[in-house]
Length: 185
Image (cartoon, rainbow, N blue to C red; front, side):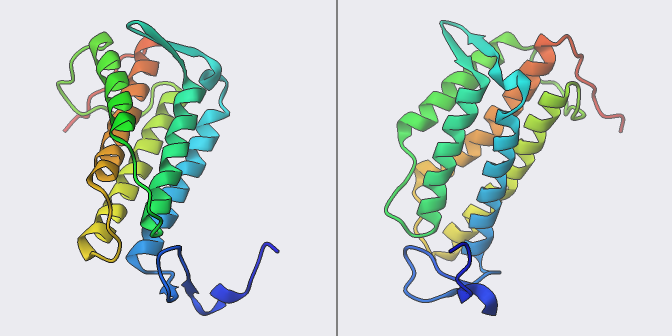
């Protein structure tokens, strides 16, 4: 069944918790925000531009493959937040750092904040970055409360993930000939 009626009282359960939690708890907030981030990445993955290759140094990636791997990793973080004995690997962190470093080598240096936009695809990646940043804040809140132990590699991964999405958005605009617009303070 797609419904159980167990959450009608405003509670939910997770892997690692023997009792029901409020749906407004830090754990439920983190899980929901990770799910929201993952769902929006699914929208990004379906875009026509996601079917294109991204050539970085000596390696070529499909945007859709990068996004799919991010989604897989977000499920690992979700499982961890829910109390499952899982966490992100150091190799996953190294992989996104490698992609970020390659993109950064192709782009002009950052000297300012930039107004989101340019291409639709880049704007969607930038929006995904903001969702991931919110998810990071929620996961850190769970970690800080000590309700669930969140591994340092998972915290590092989710922090790096927003940087990757930012780098991808900048790369898309750069390859499309879009000049980044600075805010006028």
